[in-house]
Length: 205
Length: 205
DNA sequence: GTCCTCAAACTAACTAAGTAAGTTTTATTC
DNA sequence: GAATAAAACTTACTTAGTTAGTTTGAGGAC
Image (tube, rainbow over all chains, first blue to last red; front, side):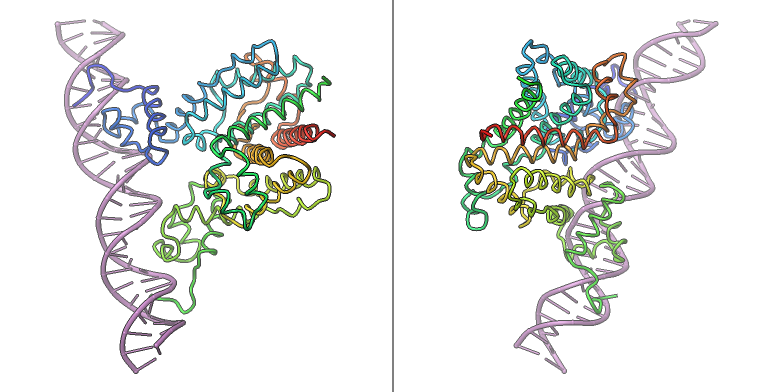
């Protein structure tokens, strides 16, 4: 076949297709050959653009972290801004839950992510938090977001609440007391609210 | 060779060896053959005890979640108890950071983990939190623990703080303001403290 | 315009890993 | 003591990541 008239691939196209493939069929479906097929190309052709699967995963990370939007942090009300940012951050990851375990441990390199972290730090120091504590709060917020997407508390309990009652009555009560479908989101909102409440009282309001 | 005089393997032994292998050399080093070699056995022999690698990962999850200790929750001071429990929970996962991405998404099945969740729910309802909110708080605490182990905020920033200053000054300030080595732990402690503060004020103390 | 070089697709093939099939020897049960 | 099942083995299949070498077209240098 030889070199095509117009390039059929580029790194960006490959990365986006990989994200789609993972979103649709899970990480297990992400093979170089399957990805190539989806791009109408043969497996080894991908290596003209990414040097290994590891690098492909880096590229996926870039695509996904670019979705993080720091704009909400411009809100004059810091509490509103941080809450909206955190929800948007979580929403971005929730669009790609199967990819998260693989991206969560990679370094932050996109302009979007770094400038979001910068905006969080700026917001926190602006309202009077010492810089060291700003980093700590930012980390805690991050942990809540990543944890809530990766762990999905609700899915950890595969059985109906009643089946836990005999051995774990308090757990059964707590699971039965609310809508199971919304538990992850409620857990996140609870955590977010408590972090912000704590921050407000730390600042003496 | 044929059947050995005394069985050389059992599921538990295999699972523990797999955890050790992952702890020492990372998930990438966990292959059926490598695990077998470590156990002085040939690869396929493992299949007499686990039916697939997926099942091996389930077994790993069991080994690790068994390390979760609910005992601290018996402390008469709920705040002390929950804090100590959360720290122990995190410490258990921190002993196996490379395994965490693969276990975080699996259902909770061990008696240790379920009874820990039950004890958290019991503690929270005992101090007056409605059951639905107990589940939410428990989820939030979980997210903080899992997120703090898996994401390691500090490692996300590979460069020295000063290199971020030109483009991300607030981020650089916040990173430079504290000891980088302890940032993950401080972020976790901050989150934990704020969650507990928020809980206390929710309960009206 | 021709030539050279490089880019970007290809085919073929290697290696490693998960796993299935079938063999052997030993423990256990009747 | 014979039959059965367990638990190791060897062999070998499939799939996936990757490398090597091939082909053809694009783009710049003279």
